[in-house]
Length: 59
Image 1: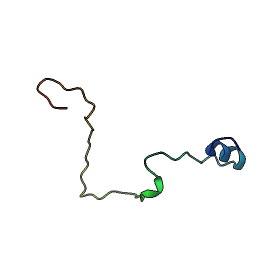
Image 2: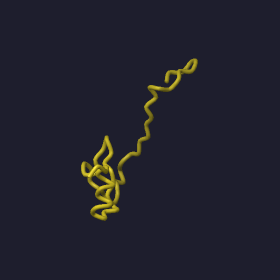
Image 3: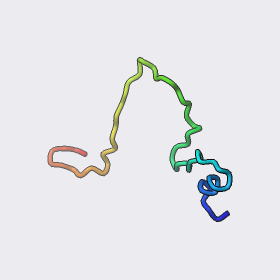
Image 4: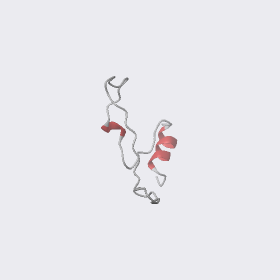
């Protein structure tokens, strides 16, 4: 009983599909879809707050 919950479930119940939950997002919050809308836009974004400033540029 001193094992972490994932290892305990694997060894005691034989559930090898069990996974540890993440700390930020929970899978059950989101709906799984087979396809995305064709009129949607794709966006990529990076947080540059930790980027070193360069002369003449703003990070």
